[in-house]
Length: 196
Image (cartoon, rainbow, N blue to C red; front, top):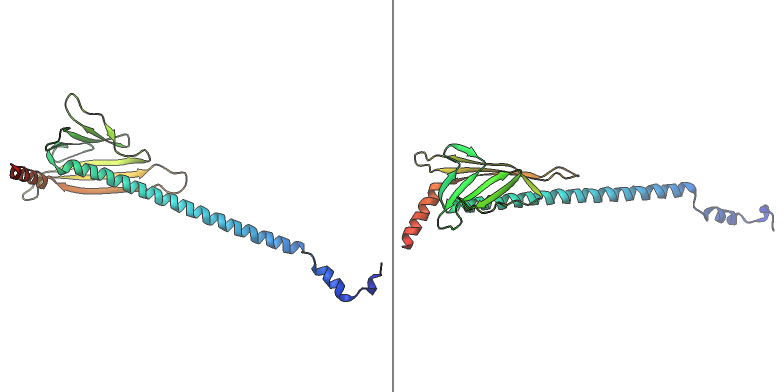
């Protein structure tokens, strides 16, 4: 073996540059950990946004479906049994023209909207209209009287909220509308007379 002095200078340099220092390894590890942390944070944000959007969409679909069912019941209304004029109620009872399963009754029962068809001694079973992923926080019907040229109307307020989620805020919406009844009743009578 040769003494160290006899080795050429550039062979010593090559031996120093051949390995990776501890500082370089730590820098690479920290950089890699930051990249993984940023990727996980971004992925979590995307999942939360997707869940929030999905909840919001579900609430909107449920609210629109329920409102359309109520408007369907009022579209061919012969009489409004409940609420009485100038009162607000969480129950709407409607009798429709030429409908075998009269009366239609919408009501709120422990955060669910129910529809019951039929009246008297043999009412039909109550059908829950909303899914089990949402809750109904408000349902009210206000029946305003006919005043001058303004026909009788039903003002509907419907509030729907998603069930509480472990992550993020709970989606909710409130729909309000006012349906003028005289138009429907007069139009139905006119069309029924025309058909005779």
